[in-house]
Length: 291
Image (cartoon, rainbow, N blue to C red; front, side):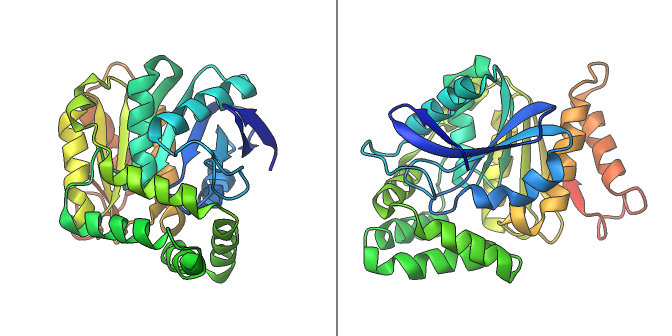
């Protein structure tokens, strides 16, 4: 991966696809840009796919500055400047979705819209608070680096090669910075500021990821211009395990933004029909559920 010196650190990044609107993909703690290999392969024909390792993760340099969402967003802004990109979509997975929201609030003029995949504006349920807190505590101890990296990589991988790529890149990161990322995720809350985000927003969740449904509905209710989809049989790890459905949604949703004559609800219905022409309308068989 090439290196960009931004904001006092070296970020490893990759640009796939030379044409189309840029989409910057943001990974959660411990994971890296390897999380979005299927997006690079399947979306680069229509978009300029930009992936990068957050500072202290993967191939990027460790950070002397504490990892916060404003810091990551400033890194992204400077990376776009480095690449000569004036505007882009932001797409974040899990806690990366929170960074998408922070980016749209901080630099609204730099982003066309946001895509949140299994994400949240705050962590407010005990189950996910406990999971993130545990990962935060484990990441303090270098001796537990391999077990934590293995557990997260196994949970996200769809095959042996994917596990190998995720696990190998995770071990290269700085666990001090990963701990800071986990800790900040527990503290972050932008829910009250959501109505200020006027950008078009695509919200994607797994039908089986029930503990996150509340976050999808919360964002959909508070964001003025959002589309909410639930992927049938999907859990939390959508970018890898449900990549085709996720990427089809991104293509169709971005195309729909060009139509200014129809209501958002009608456009979302058309997207569902395009994705499921033979099954749409059967509640028990459709692969995409819209709200």
